[in-house]
Amino acid sequence: MNVLVVGSGGREHALCWALKASPLVGKLVCAPGNPGIAEIALCRPVSVTDNAAMLQLCRDEHIDFVVVGPEVPLVNGLVDVLEAAGFACFGPTASAARIEGSKGFMKDLCAKYDIPTAFYGRFTDLASAEAYIRKHGAPIVVKADGLAAGKGVVVAMTLEEALDAARALFTEPGAEAVIEEFLDGEEVSFFALVDGKHALPLVSAQDHKRVGDGDTGPNTGGMGAYSPAPALTPALQADVMARIVQPTVAAMAAEGAPFKGVLFAGLMLTKDGPKLLEYNARFGDPECQTLMLRLKSDLLPALMAARDGQLKDFDLRWHDDAALCVVMAGRGYPGEPAKGGVIEGLQEAAAQPGAQVFHAGTKQRADGAVVADGGRVLGICARGPDIATAQARAYAAVKHVRWADGFCRSDIGWRAVARQN
Image (cartoon, rainbow, N blue to C red; front, side):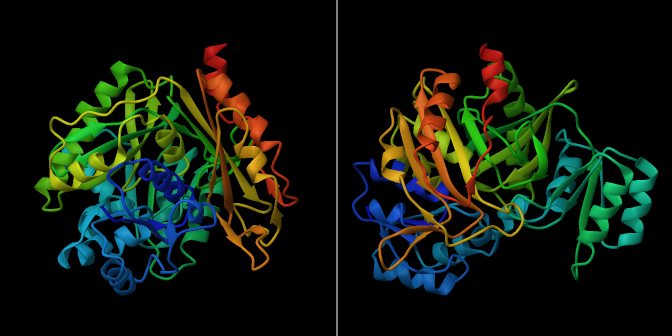
């Protein structure tokens, strides 16, 4: 089969890496891709926001199956356009992708179908938002309603911080906000493949959202991840499936927007049980990198089964090994990152025991040099028999990367390692 992966980040590199191993894949194409992906797939310079150009690419490359990586083309209806033209796609339609595209839609869905989540309010003007914040006090969470690349959330520990976040949000024309109670606990990521009716849980993972060591500083798109997440016990996973994921799948079908693709639940493990923080309509980044490293089964049949409504009796096999991903970002991230700096030592990093390097925000100059071209630039990953070993291997690989403007957290996986010790 000829397969197209849409996107250019670390998630898409990991998906291409997994799909490349499938004996069912003939030609593997990625649009637009990146220099790391170009080593294993044909990269085509088509924007993920250009539905017409992506459709033409499918025709030109005789694509049999499309895997849409990022949220923006999903929310923009790329799956609708391609499926209407006869191209099979993994990923939700635009109406189903609203579960990520609008936090307000997601929260209202939870309220209607009794899915456990934080108490909240929705606002379209600053005055009402400020009044709500003053009424409920801090800590409190201020979220932009739409897509914000993982950075549209402020966990405000003081009243002034919350008011500042609301004021900043409402400087944008047409802004909408979701303001919700602060949930205390441990945050984990839960993934399930969904075929519109059935859900197949994947292994657990845990992300690190804050930019600094010790979970300090502003939220980012994710500074690292590991799998499995020891905090998400088998009993808790069964509870999440029964009380959160399956009811959501049924709710989306009842709302006339059946969800097909991967449903990514960001959860807070509270003293009252797991509660939903947010839904994403695609694989997490960098969680996807750890999941692909642990996946033993062929990825393509699983994605096809989700699209075709055939997940009911489907099963996946996983390596017992743990996997961990350290994100290297450009100086200044999550603000304006430094770009253009030359990155060296990638082959040496990838040659370390158990290591795998995924490109996220890189480009290749005419002279062949790989340079930084984004906020989150690299995912330095490793597998090991336990999380502590995977952590040690990943950071051993990081030491081989020579990049003056690059930085990373030094404590990815600290919760799991503390439990292990």
